[in-house]
Length: 184
Image (cartoon, rainbow, N blue to C red; front, side, top):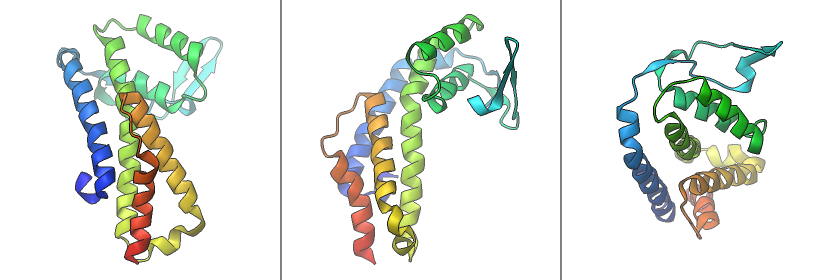
């Protein structure tokens, strides 16, 4: 992906990728000792029904074998506006008491660091594809400011989750869009 980005952004992305690799490498032993177990694969509030103290899960097409820590981290990631602060801590405590998986809390923390980078990669991939389309700059029009703000926010979340400082963030994000309009 770095080869598709402007030079300044490639350097910033490389910092994020290096931080993610370092974080994952440090926690690799926790992953290696984890046997795959059945997981929902799309655990989010929209797929949960609650009634009389019971929870039912819907939308099982993503079901498979995997790491239940990823399900938990994804739930907290996607539902960050619904489950925040003490609520997230309480939810996580309840989740952890229902599983007997060594290293589960550590793996959840790792996934929570990596998920914002995954979001950024999806956005960057879309922007790269957009830049390669012949008339794409005209199609974006009034949404350019929204796209820039969305990408900037995603970059900031990924950098914060990985503990990476990037003083040139705004300039690098905007360079993606400025470069595309110059190519027209």
